[in-house]
Length: 474
Ligand code: NDP
Image 1 (cartoon, protein in one colour):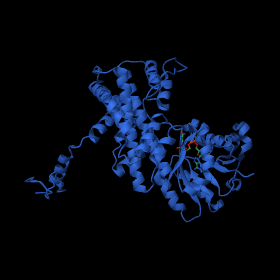
Image 2 (cartoon, helix red, strand yellow):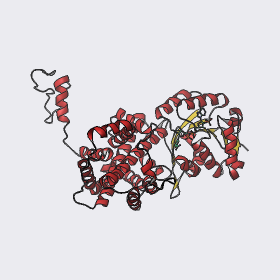
Image 3 (tube, protein in one colour):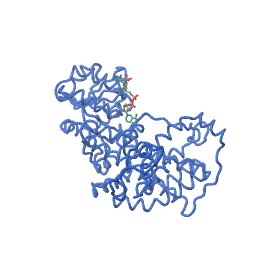
Image 4 (cartoon, rainbow, N blue to C red):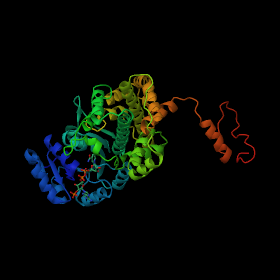
Protein backbone atom coordinates (compact mmCIF):
# COMPACT_ATOMS: atom_id res chain seq x y z
CA UNK A 1 0.00 0.00 0.00
CA UNK A 2 1.40 3.38 -1.03
CA UNK A 3 1.80 6.22 1.42
CA UNK A 4 -0.71 9.08 1.32
CA UNK A 5 2.00 11.66 1.87
CA UNK A 6 5.77 11.94 2.24
CA UNK A 7 7.94 13.98 4.63
CA UNK A 8 11.59 14.95 4.39
CA UNK A 9 13.48 16.17 7.46
CA UNK A 10 13.21 14.23 10.69
CA UNK A 11 14.46 17.02 12.96
CA UNK A 12 12.43 18.31 15.90
CA UNK A 13 9.48 19.56 13.85
CA UNK A 14 9.50 16.99 11.06
CA UNK A 15 9.64 13.92 13.29
CA UNK A 16 6.80 15.18 15.48
CA UNK A 17 4.66 16.12 12.48
CA UNK A 18 5.32 12.71 10.91
CA UNK A 19 4.18 10.94 14.09
CA UNK A 20 1.08 13.13 14.21
CA UNK A 21 0.28 12.32 10.56
CA UNK A 22 0.74 8.59 11.18
CA UNK A 23 -1.32 8.69 14.37
CA UNK A 24 -4.29 10.17 12.49
CA UNK A 25 -4.38 7.07 10.28
CA UNK A 26 -2.41 8.39 7.30
CA UNK A 27 0.31 6.20 5.85
CA UNK A 28 3.47 8.28 5.52
CA UNK A 29 6.84 7.85 3.79
CA UNK A 30 9.80 9.56 5.49
CA UNK A 31 13.33 10.48 4.46
CA UNK A 32 16.16 12.30 6.21
CA UNK A 33 19.49 13.48 4.77
CA UNK A 34 21.37 11.63 7.54
CA UNK A 35 19.95 8.16 7.15
CA UNK A 36 20.91 6.99 10.64
CA UNK A 37 18.29 9.45 11.91
CA UNK A 38 15.63 7.73 9.80
CA UNK A 39 16.29 4.40 11.52
CA UNK A 40 16.40 6.04 14.92
CA UNK A 41 13.06 7.75 14.18
CA UNK A 42 11.42 4.46 13.22
CA UNK A 43 12.61 3.06 16.55
CA UNK A 44 10.98 6.00 18.38
CA UNK A 45 7.68 5.58 16.53
CA UNK A 46 6.56 2.60 18.66
CA UNK A 47 3.05 1.45 17.71
CA UNK A 48 2.93 3.94 14.86
CA UNK A 49 5.85 2.31 13.01
CA UNK A 50 3.40 0.22 10.94
CA UNK A 51 2.05 3.41 9.34
CA UNK A 52 5.53 4.68 8.44
CA UNK A 53 7.59 3.78 5.37
CA UNK A 54 11.20 4.65 6.29
CA UNK A 55 13.26 5.30 3.16
CA UNK A 56 17.02 5.59 2.71
CA UNK A 57 17.12 7.01 -0.80
CA UNK A 58 15.12 9.75 -2.50
CA UNK A 59 14.22 7.34 -5.28
CA UNK A 60 12.76 4.79 -2.88
CA UNK A 61 11.00 7.59 -0.98
CA UNK A 62 9.30 9.08 -4.05
CA UNK A 63 8.22 5.65 -5.29
CA UNK A 64 6.56 4.94 -1.94
CA UNK A 65 4.04 7.81 -2.25
CA UNK A 66 0.70 7.72 -4.09
CA UNK A 67 0.72 10.13 -7.07
CA UNK A 68 0.16 13.02 -7.36
CA UNK A 69 2.67 13.00 -4.51
CA UNK A 70 2.47 15.53 -1.70
CA UNK A 71 5.93 15.85 -0.11
CA UNK A 72 6.38 17.91 3.03
CA UNK A 73 9.87 19.41 3.30
CA UNK A 74 10.49 20.24 6.96
CA UNK A 75 14.16 21.17 7.02
CA UNK A 76 16.36 24.13 7.86
CA UNK A 77 15.00 27.19 6.02
CA UNK A 78 17.00 28.86 3.25
CA UNK A 79 19.42 27.28 0.78
CA UNK A 80 18.83 23.79 2.18
CA UNK A 81 15.26 23.93 0.81
CA UNK A 82 16.50 24.78 -2.70
CA UNK A 83 19.05 21.97 -2.51
CA UNK A 84 16.31 19.58 -1.44
CA UNK A 85 14.05 20.70 -4.30
CA UNK A 86 16.94 20.11 -6.74
CA UNK A 87 17.52 16.64 -5.31
CA UNK A 88 13.82 15.73 -5.59
CA UNK A 89 13.03 17.11 -9.03
CA UNK A 90 14.55 14.35 -11.19
CA UNK A 91 12.32 11.78 -9.49
CA UNK A 92 9.01 13.66 -9.54
CA UNK A 93 6.33 13.72 -12.19
CA UNK A 94 3.53 16.08 -13.24
CA UNK A 95 1.15 17.13 -10.49
CA UNK A 96 3.49 16.22 -7.62
CA UNK A 97 3.46 18.82 -4.86
CA UNK A 98 6.47 19.91 -2.84
CA UNK A 99 5.33 21.51 0.42
CA UNK A 100 7.82 23.71 2.25
CA UNK A 101 6.68 23.59 5.86
CA UNK A 102 9.67 25.41 7.37
CA UNK A 103 9.86 29.05 8.38
CA UNK A 104 10.61 30.37 4.92
CA UNK A 105 10.73 34.02 4.02
CA UNK A 106 7.64 34.39 1.84
CA UNK A 107 9.74 36.13 -0.83
CA UNK A 108 11.80 32.94 -1.17
CA UNK A 109 8.54 31.00 -1.43
CA UNK A 110 7.34 33.34 -4.20
CA UNK A 111 10.64 32.76 -6.04
CA UNK A 112 10.24 28.97 -5.70
CA UNK A 113 6.75 29.12 -7.19
CA UNK A 114 8.20 31.14 -10.04
CA UNK A 115 11.01 28.67 -10.55
CA UNK A 116 8.67 25.69 -10.69
CA UNK A 117 6.13 27.31 -13.01
CA UNK A 118 6.02 25.47 -16.31
CA UNK A 119 7.65 22.31 -14.90
CA UNK A 120 4.34 20.55 -14.22
CA UNK A 121 5.33 20.33 -10.55
CA UNK A 122 3.50 22.30 -7.91
CA UNK A 123 4.52 23.91 -4.69
CA UNK A 124 2.88 24.83 -1.40
CA UNK A 125 4.33 27.28 1.11
CA UNK A 126 2.96 26.14 4.45
CA UNK A 127 3.34 27.97 7.74
CA UNK A 128 3.27 25.66 10.76
CA UNK A 129 3.00 27.10 14.25
CA UNK A 130 2.95 25.57 17.67
CA UNK A 131 6.52 24.40 18.12
CA UNK A 132 7.38 20.79 18.88
CA UNK A 133 4.25 20.13 20.92
CA UNK A 134 2.01 21.61 18.22
CA UNK A 135 3.66 19.53 15.50
CA UNK A 136 3.08 16.36 17.54
CA UNK A 137 -0.46 16.96 18.77
CA UNK A 138 -1.98 19.65 16.55
CA UNK A 139 -0.37 22.72 14.99
CA UNK A 140 -1.98 25.70 13.32
CA UNK A 141 -1.43 25.34 9.58
CA UNK A 142 -1.41 28.24 7.10
CA UNK A 143 -1.41 27.17 3.47
CA UNK A 144 -0.39 29.10 0.35
CA UNK A 145 -0.61 27.55 -3.12
CA UNK A 146 -3.21 26.66 -5.70
CA UNK A 147 -6.65 25.51 -4.46
CA UNK A 148 -6.15 22.30 -6.51
CA UNK A 149 -2.93 21.36 -4.73
CA UNK A 150 -4.56 22.15 -1.39
CA UNK A 151 -7.46 19.84 -2.27
CA UNK A 152 -4.96 16.95 -2.59
CA UNK A 153 -3.62 17.46 0.96
CA UNK A 154 -6.60 18.98 2.76
CA UNK A 155 -7.78 15.73 4.37
CA UNK A 156 -4.36 14.88 5.81
CA UNK A 157 -3.64 18.43 6.98
CA UNK A 158 -7.01 18.97 8.65
CA UNK A 159 -6.66 15.58 10.37
CA UNK A 160 -3.38 16.63 12.03
CA UNK A 161 -4.21 20.29 12.74
CA UNK A 162 -5.23 21.59 16.16
CA UNK A 163 -8.98 21.78 16.75
CA UNK A 164 -10.88 24.68 18.28
CA UNK A 165 -14.34 23.42 19.20
CA UNK A 166 -13.94 20.74 16.48
CA UNK A 167 -12.93 23.30 13.85
CA UNK A 168 -9.53 22.38 12.37
CA UNK A 169 -6.95 25.17 12.63
CA UNK A 170 -5.86 24.72 9.03
CA UNK A 171 -6.86 26.66 5.96
CA UNK A 172 -5.93 27.61 2.45
CA UNK A 173 -5.24 31.32 2.64
CA UNK A 174 -4.25 32.27 -0.89
CA UNK A 175 -1.87 31.72 -3.77
CA UNK A 176 1.91 31.30 -3.64
CA UNK A 177 3.48 33.06 -0.62
CA UNK A 178 0.23 33.72 1.30
CA UNK A 179 0.73 30.96 3.89
CA UNK A 180 4.31 31.87 4.71
CA UNK A 181 3.43 35.57 4.81
CA UNK A 182 0.65 34.96 7.32
CA UNK A 183 2.98 32.76 9.40
CA UNK A 184 5.54 35.58 9.41
CA UNK A 185 2.98 38.08 10.68
CA UNK A 186 1.82 35.53 13.26
CA UNK A 187 5.40 35.51 14.53
CA UNK A 188 5.60 39.32 14.43
CA UNK A 189 2.50 39.52 16.62
CA UNK A 190 4.04 36.84 18.85
CA UNK A 191 7.14 39.04 19.33
CA UNK A 192 4.93 41.97 20.38
CA UNK A 193 2.78 39.83 22.68
CA UNK A 194 5.87 38.44 24.42
CA UNK A 195 7.60 41.81 24.72
CA UNK A 196 4.52 43.44 26.26
CA UNK A 197 4.23 40.63 28.79
CA UNK A 198 7.93 41.08 29.59
CA UNK A 199 7.46 44.83 30.08
CA UNK A 200 4.61 44.26 32.57
CA UNK A 201 6.87 41.71 34.30
CA UNK A 202 9.57 44.42 34.41
CA UNK A 203 7.18 46.87 36.10
CA UNK A 204 6.19 44.28 38.69
CA UNK A 205 9.81 43.23 39.31
CA UNK A 206 11.70 46.54 39.15
CA UNK A 207 8.93 49.06 39.84
CA UNK A 208 7.09 47.18 42.55
CA UNK A 209 9.79 44.84 43.88
CA UNK A 210 7.80 41.64 43.44
CA UNK A 211 9.41 38.21 43.33
CA UNK A 212 9.13 35.95 40.31
CA UNK A 213 6.77 33.66 42.20
CA UNK A 214 4.51 36.56 43.17
CA UNK A 215 4.47 37.83 39.59
CA UNK A 216 3.70 34.31 38.40
CA UNK A 217 0.64 34.26 40.65
CA UNK A 218 -0.53 37.57 39.19
CA UNK A 219 -0.23 36.20 35.64
CA UNK A 220 -2.03 33.05 36.78
CA UNK A 221 -4.94 35.19 37.94
CA UNK A 222 -4.98 37.13 34.66
CA UNK A 223 -5.07 33.88 32.71
CA UNK A 224 -8.58 33.33 34.07
CA UNK A 225 -9.81 36.60 32.57
CA UNK A 226 -9.68 38.55 29.34
CA UNK A 227 -5.94 37.88 28.87
CA UNK A 228 -6.49 34.11 28.87
CA UNK A 229 -3.98 32.71 26.38
CA UNK A 230 -1.17 30.22 25.92
CA UNK A 231 1.52 32.88 26.36
CA UNK A 232 0.07 34.11 29.68
CA UNK A 233 -0.35 30.49 30.83
CA UNK A 234 3.29 29.63 30.13
CA UNK A 235 4.43 32.92 31.66
CA UNK A 236 2.88 31.82 34.96
CA UNK A 237 4.55 28.41 34.67
CA UNK A 238 7.93 29.92 33.80
CA UNK A 239 7.80 32.46 36.64
CA UNK A 240 6.91 29.88 39.26
CA UNK A 241 9.52 27.28 38.22
CA UNK A 242 12.56 26.74 40.45
CA UNK A 243 16.06 25.83 39.34
CA UNK A 244 16.60 22.23 40.51
CA UNK A 245 20.29 22.91 41.24
CA UNK A 246 19.90 25.99 43.46
CA UNK A 247 16.22 26.21 44.36
CA UNK A 248 16.15 29.81 43.12
CA UNK A 249 13.54 31.02 40.66
CA UNK A 250 14.66 29.71 37.28
CA UNK A 251 13.85 32.94 35.48
CA UNK A 252 16.15 34.92 37.79
CA UNK A 253 19.09 32.80 36.63
CA UNK A 254 18.51 33.27 32.91
CA UNK A 255 20.67 35.78 31.03
CA UNK A 256 18.60 38.71 29.71
CA UNK A 257 19.63 38.37 26.07
CA UNK A 258 16.79 37.41 23.72
CA UNK A 259 17.44 35.40 20.55
CA UNK A 260 15.66 35.88 17.25
CA UNK A 261 15.65 33.94 14.03
CA UNK A 262 14.23 36.55 11.66
CA UNK A 263 10.47 36.30 11.34
CA UNK A 264 9.88 39.33 13.60
CA UNK A 265 12.33 41.36 11.55
CA UNK A 266 10.71 40.21 8.29
CA UNK A 267 7.28 41.33 9.58
CA UNK A 268 8.66 44.79 10.26
CA UNK A 269 10.50 45.01 6.93
CA UNK A 270 7.37 44.05 5.01
CA UNK A 271 5.24 46.49 7.03
CA UNK A 272 7.70 49.27 6.25
CA UNK A 273 7.85 48.27 2.57
CA UNK A 274 4.09 48.69 2.32
CA UNK A 275 3.95 51.83 4.45
CA UNK A 276 1.89 50.27 7.23
CA UNK A 277 2.68 51.29 10.82
CA UNK A 278 3.41 48.22 12.93
CA UNK A 279 5.02 50.15 15.76
CA UNK A 280 4.39 47.66 18.57
CA UNK A 281 5.98 44.87 16.53
CA UNK A 282 8.88 47.15 15.55
CA UNK A 283 9.42 48.02 19.22
CA UNK A 284 9.44 44.33 20.15
CA UNK A 285 12.03 43.44 17.52
CA UNK A 286 14.21 46.40 18.51
CA UNK A 287 13.88 45.44 22.19
CA UNK A 288 15.28 41.97 21.42
CA UNK A 289 18.17 43.55 19.54
CA UNK A 290 18.92 45.93 22.43
CA UNK A 291 18.66 43.04 24.89
CA UNK A 292 21.45 41.25 23.05
CA UNK A 293 23.83 44.20 23.60
CA UNK A 294 24.49 43.07 27.15
CA UNK A 295 28.00 44.48 27.60
CA UNK A 296 27.03 47.86 26.13
CA UNK A 297 24.07 48.03 28.51
CA UNK A 298 26.30 47.17 31.45
CA UNK A 299 28.75 49.91 30.49
CA UNK A 300 25.91 52.42 30.07
CA UNK A 301 24.43 51.56 33.47
CA UNK A 302 27.85 52.17 35.03
CA UNK A 303 28.05 55.52 33.22
CA UNK A 304 24.54 56.86 33.74
CA UNK A 305 23.47 54.94 36.83
CA UNK A 306 20.18 53.13 37.17
CA UNK A 307 17.10 55.29 37.79
CA UNK A 308 15.60 54.45 41.16
CA UNK A 309 12.46 56.53 40.96
CA UNK A 310 9.22 55.46 42.56
CA UNK A 311 6.62 53.69 40.43
CA UNK A 312 3.30 55.20 41.40
CA UNK A 313 0.03 54.76 39.61
CA UNK A 314 -2.46 57.54 40.14
CA UNK A 315 -6.03 56.34 40.32
CA UNK A 316 -7.31 52.89 39.46
CA UNK A 317 -6.53 49.55 41.01
CA UNK A 318 -2.92 48.52 40.42
CA UNK A 319 -3.44 44.93 39.24
CA UNK A 320 -6.50 45.78 37.17
CA UNK A 321 -4.67 48.68 35.57
CA UNK A 322 -1.73 46.48 34.62
CA UNK A 323 -4.08 43.81 33.25
CA UNK A 324 -6.06 46.32 31.20
CA UNK A 325 -2.90 48.07 30.00
CA UNK A 326 -1.57 44.77 28.67
CA UNK A 327 -4.93 44.07 27.07
CA UNK A 328 -5.11 47.47 25.33
CA UNK A 329 -1.55 47.12 24.06
CA UNK A 330 -2.29 43.62 22.81
CA UNK A 331 -5.22 45.00 20.78
CA UNK A 332 -2.86 47.50 19.12
CA UNK A 333 -0.34 44.76 18.22
CA UNK A 334 -3.00 42.54 16.66
CA UNK A 335 -4.63 45.50 14.88
CA UNK A 336 -1.24 46.35 13.38
CA UNK A 337 -0.53 42.75 12.34
CA UNK A 338 -3.92 42.44 10.64
CA UNK A 339 -3.44 45.82 8.94
CA UNK A 340 -0.12 44.59 7.51
CA UNK A 341 -1.85 41.46 6.21
CA UNK A 342 -4.65 43.54 4.65
CA UNK A 343 -2.07 45.64 2.82
CA UNK A 344 -0.16 42.56 1.65
CA UNK A 345 -3.40 41.02 0.46
CA UNK A 346 -3.92 44.04 -1.82
CA UNK A 347 -0.27 44.21 -2.85
CA UNK A 348 0.07 40.54 -3.80
CA UNK A 349 -3.53 39.90 -4.93
CA UNK A 350 -4.21 37.25 -2.30
CA UNK A 351 -7.67 38.12 -0.88
CA UNK A 352 -6.48 36.96 2.55
CA UNK A 353 -9.53 35.88 4.58
CA UNK A 354 -9.09 37.78 7.86
CA UNK A 355 -11.81 35.96 9.87
CA UNK A 356 -10.33 32.62 8.78
CA UNK A 357 -6.81 33.66 9.77
CA UNK A 358 -8.01 34.64 13.25
CA UNK A 359 -9.94 31.36 13.39
CA UNK A 360 -6.97 29.10 12.62
CA UNK A 361 -4.89 30.92 15.24
CA UNK A 362 -7.41 30.16 18.01
CA UNK A 363 -5.67 26.85 18.78
CA UNK A 364 -2.39 25.10 17.99
CA UNK A 365 -0.19 28.16 17.57
CA UNK A 366 1.87 30.16 20.07
CA UNK A 367 -0.47 33.19 20.12
CA UNK A 368 -3.58 31.05 20.60
CA UNK A 369 -6.26 32.59 22.79
CA UNK A 370 -9.96 33.26 23.16
CA UNK A 371 -9.17 36.80 22.11
CA UNK A 372 -8.71 35.48 18.54
CA UNK A 373 -12.26 34.21 18.62
CA UNK A 374 -13.35 37.80 19.25
CA UNK A 375 -11.21 38.95 16.31
CA UNK A 376 -12.89 36.32 14.09
CA UNK A 377 -16.30 37.62 15.13
CA UNK A 378 -15.31 41.27 14.65
CA UNK A 379 -13.96 40.71 11.12
CA UNK A 380 -16.96 38.54 10.22
CA UNK A 381 -19.37 41.22 11.40
CA UNK A 382 -17.39 44.11 9.86
CA UNK A 383 -15.40 42.68 6.92
CA UNK A 384 -14.57 46.11 5.47
CA UNK A 385 -13.33 47.70 8.69
CA UNK A 386 -10.27 49.86 8.01
CA UNK A 387 -8.64 48.61 11.20
CA UNK A 388 -9.52 46.13 13.95
CA UNK A 389 -9.71 48.95 16.52
CA UNK A 390 -12.61 50.67 14.74
CA UNK A 391 -14.85 47.59 14.73
CA UNK A 392 -17.72 48.04 17.22
CA UNK A 393 -16.52 45.25 19.52
CA UNK A 394 -12.89 46.33 19.64
CA UNK A 395 -13.53 50.07 19.82
CA UNK A 396 -15.55 49.36 22.98
CA UNK A 397 -12.63 47.36 24.41
CA UNK A 398 -10.16 50.11 23.52
CA UNK A 399 -12.32 52.76 25.19
CA UNK A 400 -12.47 50.65 28.34
CA UNK A 401 -8.78 49.75 28.54
CA UNK A 402 -6.94 52.75 27.08
CA UNK A 403 -7.01 54.86 30.28
CA UNK A 404 -5.18 52.04 32.08
CA UNK A 405 -2.53 51.79 29.37
CA UNK A 406 -2.03 55.55 29.61
CA UNK A 407 -1.64 55.46 33.41
CA UNK A 408 0.73 52.47 33.31
CA UNK A 409 2.94 53.90 30.55
CA UNK A 410 3.04 57.30 32.28
CA UNK A 411 4.00 55.71 35.59
CA UNK A 412 6.64 53.48 33.98
CA UNK A 413 8.18 56.36 32.05
CA UNK A 414 8.26 58.51 35.20
CA UNK A 415 9.97 55.69 37.07
CA UNK A 416 12.61 55.20 34.36
CA UNK A 417 11.33 51.74 33.41
CA UNK A 418 11.60 50.91 29.70
CA UNK A 419 8.26 50.02 28.13
CA UNK A 420 8.89 50.43 24.40
CA UNK A 421 6.13 48.15 23.12
CA UNK A 422 3.47 49.37 25.58
CA UNK A 423 4.37 52.98 24.81
CA UNK A 424 4.31 52.34 21.06
CA UNK A 425 0.87 50.81 21.38
CA UNK A 426 -0.36 53.83 23.33
CA UNK A 427 0.99 56.38 20.87
CA UNK A 428 -0.41 54.31 17.99
CA UNK A 429 -3.90 54.76 19.42
CA UNK A 430 -3.31 58.43 20.10
CA UNK A 431 -1.93 59.14 16.64
CA UNK A 432 -4.51 57.00 14.84
CA UNK A 433 -7.42 58.88 16.33
CA UNK A 434 -5.96 62.35 15.84
CA UNK A 435 -7.88 63.86 12.92
CA UNK A 436 -5.47 66.81 12.74
CA UNK A 437 -1.93 65.69 13.36
CA UNK A 438 1.38 67.50 13.05
CA UNK A 439 2.42 66.45 9.54
CA UNK A 440 1.45 69.93 8.29
CA UNK A 441 4.74 71.09 9.79
CA UNK A 442 6.64 68.24 8.13
CA UNK A 443 5.11 69.18 4.79
CA UNK A 444 6.16 72.79 5.32
CA UNK A 445 9.73 71.71 6.14
CA UNK A 446 9.84 69.44 3.08
CA UNK A 447 8.63 72.28 0.94
CA UNK A 448 11.18 74.66 2.49
CA UNK A 449 14.25 72.55 1.80
CA UNK A 450 13.09 70.48 -1.18
CA UNK A 451 10.21 72.37 -2.83
CA UNK A 452 8.14 69.20 -2.42
CA UNK A 453 4.85 71.13 -2.29
CA UNK A 454 1.83 70.59 -0.08
CA UNK A 455 -1.95 70.46 -0.21
CA UNK A 456 -3.84 73.20 1.64
CA UNK A 457 -6.67 72.78 4.08
CA UNK A 458 -8.64 75.54 2.32
CA UNK A 459 -8.36 73.85 -1.09
CA UNK A 460 -6.64 76.85 -2.74
CA UNK A 461 -4.44 75.98 -5.69
CA UNK A 462 -1.21 77.28 -4.12
CA UNK A 463 1.24 74.51 -3.23
CA UNK A 464 4.39 76.28 -2.06
CA UNK A 465 5.02 78.47 0.98
CA UNK A 466 6.36 82.03 1.25
CA UNK A 467 9.56 80.82 2.91
CA UNK A 468 11.88 83.64 1.84
CA UNK A 469 15.65 83.45 1.58
CA UNK A 470 17.38 80.09 1.92
CA UNK A 471 14.34 78.09 0.87
CA UNK A 472 14.31 75.90 -2.22
CA UNK A 473 10.71 76.81 -2.88
CA UNK A 474 11.40 80.54 -2.79
P1 NDP B 1 16.10 20.75 13.32
O1 NDP B 1 17.39 21.47 13.47
O2 NDP B 1 15.60 19.95 14.46
O3 NDP B 1 16.19 19.77 12.06
C1 NDP B 1 16.73 20.21 10.87
C2 NDP B 1 16.41 19.20 9.78
O4 NDP B 1 16.84 19.77 8.53
C3 NDP B 1 17.13 17.88 9.92
O5 NDP B 1 16.30 16.85 9.51
C4 NDP B 1 18.31 18.05 8.96
O6 NDP B 1 18.80 16.85 8.46
C5 NDP B 1 17.66 18.83 7.86
N1 NDP B 1 18.60 19.55 7.01
C6 NDP B 1 19.40 20.59 7.35
N2 NDP B 1 20.11 20.99 6.29
C7 NDP B 1 19.75 20.20 5.26
C8 NDP B 1 20.11 20.13 3.89
N3 NDP B 1 21.01 20.99 3.37
N4 NDP B 1 19.51 19.20 3.10
C9 NDP B 1 18.61 18.35 3.62
N5 NDP B 1 18.22 18.36 4.90
C10 NDP B 1 18.79 19.27 5.71
O7 NDP B 1 15.05 21.84 12.83
P2 NDP B 1 13.50 22.05 13.24
O8 NDP B 1 12.79 20.76 13.07
O9 NDP B 1 13.38 22.78 14.52
O10 NDP B 1 13.03 23.09 12.11
C11 NDP B 1 12.70 22.70 10.78
C12 NDP B 1 12.00 23.87 10.11
O11 NDP B 1 10.80 24.15 10.83
C13 NDP B 1 12.79 25.18 10.10
O12 NDP B 1 12.49 25.88 8.93
C14 NDP B 1 12.22 25.92 11.29
O13 NDP B 1 12.40 27.30 11.18
C15 NDP B 1 10.77 25.51 11.20
N6 NDP B 1 9.99 25.64 12.43
C16 NDP B 1 10.51 25.29 13.63
C17 NDP B 1 9.75 25.44 14.78
C18 NDP B 1 10.28 25.02 16.10
O14 NDP B 1 9.61 25.33 17.11
N7 NDP B 1 11.40 24.35 16.18
C19 NDP B 1 8.37 25.96 14.73
C20 NDP B 1 7.89 26.21 13.42
C21 NDP B 1 8.69 26.08 12.32
P3 NDP B 1 20.07 16.11 9.15
O15 NDP B 1 19.50 15.21 10.21
O16 NDP B 1 20.67 15.35 8.02
O17 NDP B 1 20.97 17.18 9.69
